[in-house]
Length: 224
Figure 1: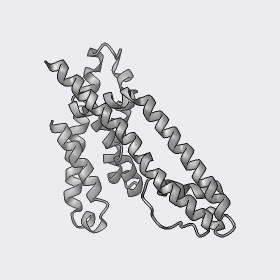
Figure 2 (figure 1 turned 120 degrees about the horizontal axis):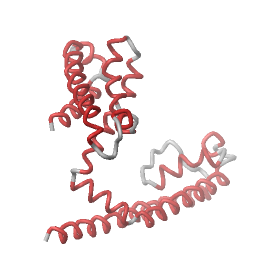
Figure 3 (figure 1 turned 60 degrees about the vertical axis):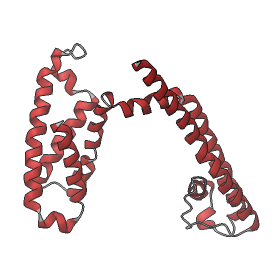
């Protein structure tokens, strides 16, 4: 639990450090916190390396150290040392994103994440079909807008890949408004795409809602 709290605190520090005024004003506080976290994480990492051979899955500490999860932990430890070596802050912040991966280890202990995993696994084929349908609709709508708008707006719809940005924004019902069709055919296609997008969003939502309900029912029945 202590390690989990420190992981969350380190992520929070990484977020706060992106505010330059805050980071420069409280540099000593940030450096001290990073030093304490590095000491705790390094000790915890060394302890796991030492105890790894006790697990039958790993024949040696080196084999455990080469696993993806252990390599992520090593990258996190390196990210703590980088500022003291004068490394670029931008690179450091990119490495700090790896800390989020460590939280994934909580999944085996978290009932909520188990339910999500079971639901996605149970309906993976339906979700795959919905993804294929979404890609097909995106390709179709961007192709229509390309033919309708390529001469009027070549910068935005001059190719099908360019038109895909508009298609994604419309099908997901985001509608940034940076790309707007001007021709009659383009506007009709845009309206149809917008209506289709409503159903497209509802399709995987309904699939997952049903899967979550089934997963929760199975877990509750297993407890009885």
